Amino acid sequence: MASEQQHVRRGFHRVRVWRAFVYVAIAVFFLVMMLAAHAATVGQRAPAFTGRDSQGKTQSLDHYRGKYVVLEWTNRDCPYTKKQYDSGNMQALQQQWTSKGVVWFTVLSSAKGEDGYLNAADENAQLAHVRAHPTAALLDPSGEIGKLYSAKTTPHMFIIDPEGKLIYAGAIDDKATTDRADVKTAKNYVSAALTQAMAGQLIEVASTRPYGCSVKYGE
Image (cartoon, rainbow, N blue to C red):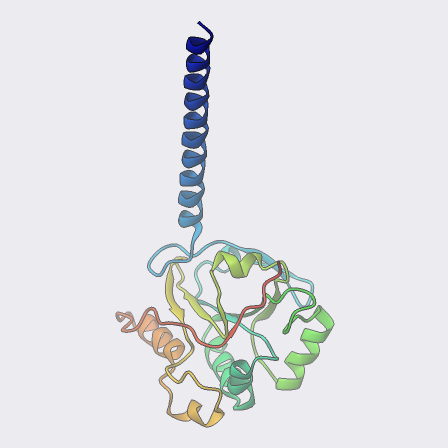
């Protein structure tokens, strides 16, 4: 009799364990689906975000619906970022495209205490020092915006069209070096994508592998 009761208890235990496993699997599945629905995927709607810029102003992607938006992940300590700024290339791109109505955000996702972290005052001083021309610099020390877009490197570039669709994601150009002399001979993917999109043409290269320093997210 006791043996039979033990057998029944073991059976109930196995059922409970199996049910717990099923519940966890279902929860994980829906979590993955939710994350996938909000992931930055070329050809899909870009993830919405709201953040504060270095001037203390709240910026949101929705506010710029109807305009092209460029997101540029940056880190002043990264030699790949320095290549673009020391050559004057990034500033020239910012000035060129913002003059055509494009909204250009530099995004700082380095966590406090990590390379590349800057507070608002320091970032404003850095922008003035390198004579940068973004629409605004978004301070993202929590990494929330960076993780929404799975930003991996500095620089890592994204372009969003006026309908809110992500139309380019990846490297700034095809010269994955820190040599600023390479900028002159590089194919700039960002300029090419914006030029083609604004002309109503198909973007020839809509996704590339980003290169640079890793984004210094917090723990």
